[in-house]
Image (cartoon, rainbow, N blue to C red):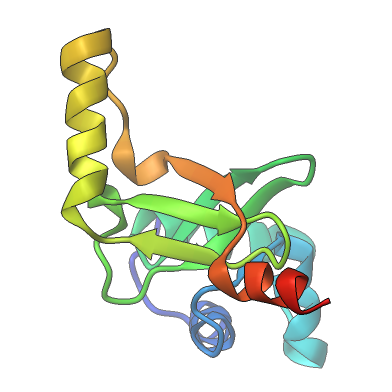
Length: 134
């Protein structure tokens, strides 16, 4: 796949960079680009190419197929991700505790986790606070 930065790729990156903690379906991405949006097959090729070069990350979403998240300058291969089941926000868990958990699981359970592809689900502090205020 091409590593060249095309206008279509840049439009997708610019759109996703505006809300870097959000996850988007391919349809959401293409529809948000308006009349300049690439066709569906071109859109999927652009997303695949952006995933391949590490600019965005593809996650399997519960019940919705796949979603895409903006990576930017982050090294998503070396940390867990946590996703709020209320608002859909994804948080890059860039702390040592994630590695300690992965090491524990490997040492005590014989299972090596692919950290960069792992998402844990729960409720973020913002959504917890909203529930407490109601």
